[in-house]
Image (cartoon, rainbow, N blue to C red; front, top):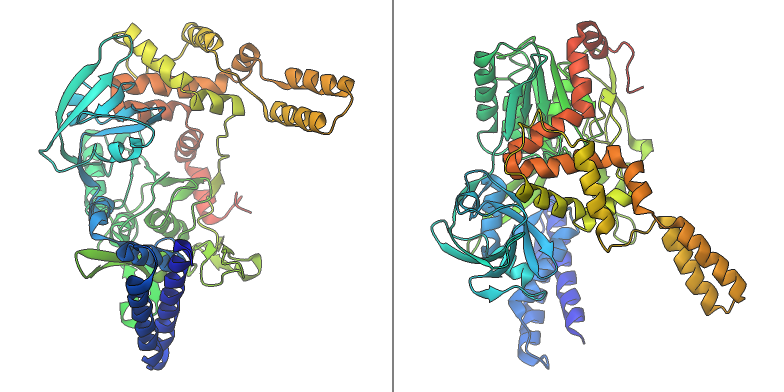
Length: 557
């Protein structure tokens, strides 16, 4: 019996116990579950006493528990004592660290982003720096992941880094004191030139609604705005109560916002607006995309169902499940799915059907045959089982293979680092642009790099040539295939011209973040943002705004 077979055996027993427990919950007979746990205990005891090799029993049980929970849904998760810090980060957004993001580059950690005012920033670290050793330990391929984790640690603890910096021959030694890093719930908020409040919400952690309300009040005091744009793109969600609190700012007291329904009937709850709205009539647009999930979908879905906001962007993720966390023994926790939520029209937007798995264990989306129509407050047609479909769809930006290769090969990143050290200052975000001069400089840089670019068709032709040689085709045919491969390969010079307009925003953003940090990135993204531009157009056209909410010229039909 192999180690893997033992693990699977333990897992199957856990599954048996788990499924039986759910069954017994309904009929009141707990004999089967007790029997399963007795069997599980016996198996563990026998393996521990008689198996030929030493076996890490706690590790096996932990892995079996993970596999057991994975059979339920991705959101039901067990946190071991060692993972409690990850759990705290999830619910608070706070961790001990240096305030820098890194990614792997061969045998170093490349600093990709730095939080302004963080220990990394205060100690003089720069985007583009390569960390080559951590606390005196040289980074290698085998330890790079573990050393990356050591960047986080107890606030107040010291971290020693050896840095390789662009343009310098000698390594730099940095001593950094870790601090408590708290990611911003609202990383950016401002009033646009068109006099609309724009507020970007990154998560629905504790106090999100209070911070959201406070930020809007500050903006309104600064300049009375005529519309609000709520950006929930890439917001994975968080606490249901915070979503309810934000919706309550815009809808009448007593309005139904969301309800939850699960197995434990006493936990079912209807959430209504408990207070009078702060902004009862001001036009609102909500921006969403495929990564807007959970609480983001409660806000966008409730405002859509109540015909209180126009939703713009791409279809949301489709997570209509509610989780709670419960304490378990030995300083562990379990986050468990307890209910589905339903927004005011009565629909649940859950897109994946975890309760009905295929024979191979895989899951699929809710079938079209089970998708139903629902009506908003004004009678507009909306649907369940597929996330929140925006009132105005904006196509998702897709990158060419050439641009993806530029990113994968660090050519945009490395050129931006080179540009930073060659230019002490740049104009403000709104004034800085990657003009023809900068782009031509970048193009020359790329052309001088010894990196090949292959198109999909070129890769296919190369494989075809290899197959032809293996199958002993005539040399004349093989030569023709190789000639075709050369013709299909990407010419750097022509590709840079072809994809210039696609590359410029990415290059501009990469340069700007070295000078203006996260806020600079967001401000620059706003210049190229198709969804934001559409939001401004809709808010500027009151008649069109009202037509959408009344169902006239419904863009979703």
